[in-house]
Image 1 (tube, rainbow, N blue to C red):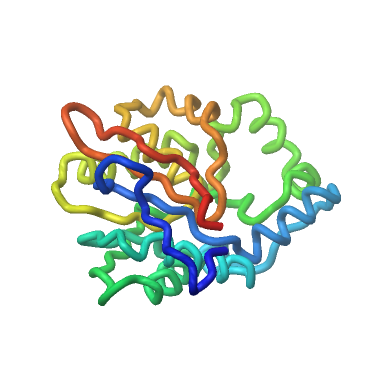
Image 2 (tube, rainbow, N blue to C red; image 1 turned 180 degrees about the vertical axis):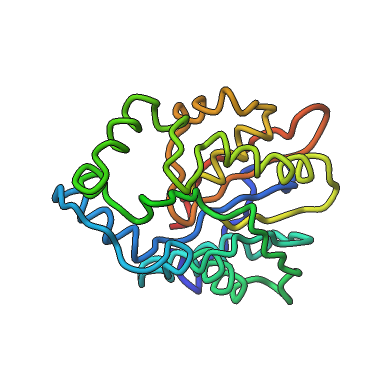
Length: 233
């Protein structure tokens, strides 16, 4: 973490300030519990709704560090996922910005992947309670698979395409606060990707909690300048 007496890192690494910045929320309580259950091979279904999962104590510290990272980046607007962990990330980060925070738009299209009947289930829990779905998922592949009541990555790309079009064509500096799948799909879509080829994001590096990705606009598609950067953590 960056100490309060240290120089605040800027959002940019050389060049000009980015036009589009997308960040993943800080670590959530579900990230912690899910990771522990998967490591132990436990058939766990986490309680509650995915949209209501809050930040963990570490996630709150990460959000503060993210705010210090963003301190000198003055977006004209913030677009935020409606999920609690994303909203908490922005609220904490906003307290570390220089000057009043910009206007915030909560956008349902920026929500995490909807997993329907498999919501908050570990792979072992899916195997135990929905074995046919586990086999269908394996046969269809992660990017094409659509759980009952949920969506595939292609479905997510379809709902995010208009967001990417607006971000790519606009002239405002916009900060997006959302989820790992959203950040990866924005990278894919801002580069001109089409939904049938969405499995291409499997080749991207992971999007860590509280990481920063950024683009600059120019001729053609926006150009990626950072992806999943966590140098501020």
